[in-house]
Structure formats: structure tokens, C-alpha cells
Image (cartoon, rainbow, N blue to C red; front, top):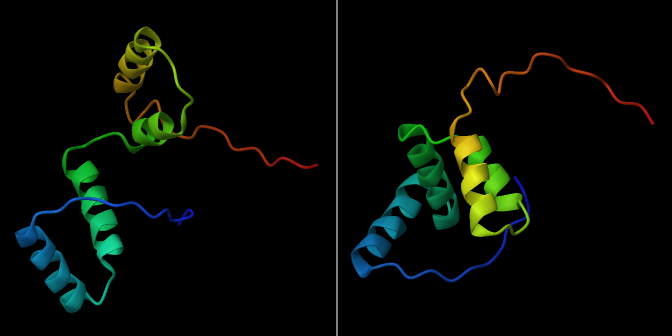
Length: 91
């Protein structure tokens, strides 16, 4: 897992009660529960995780560049992301 960051989010009281109960039942932190829920959402909606990884780590680009990159990334298929060769790099 990568480095964790602290953020403040707003959650309605009913959702917070559910999260606290899930924390108790699953013996996990609320952060872990939210991470798992996001991963399940990405999987269930068949979102391309590579897309999100690239988009969240990319430097800023203008709207036109962003639209072009988004269009290209959205067109990628599982076959496009298949590893075809592996190389070991040495210093």
C-alpha cells in the first residue's frame, strides 16, 4: 500500500453510523472499509484502474489535452494492457 494521507470528508450521520458498525463487525478501520468499497465500485462498474492510476498521477494539462488523453485511455481494452514481454533491468 502506498503512503497514506490525512483528509477531511463530510459524511451524513446515517452513513457514518453504518461505517462505525462495519468497523466493529469487520474489525477494520473506516479507511480500509472505504478503500475496499472504492475498489469494489471500480470493479463492478468495470472502470479501468489503469486510467485512474494515470489520471491521478499525471501532471496538469489543459482541457483540450485532457479530453484527448481521456478519449485515448477510454479506448484501451484489456488486450491493450496485456503484458507481452518482460525484461530485467540491471544497473
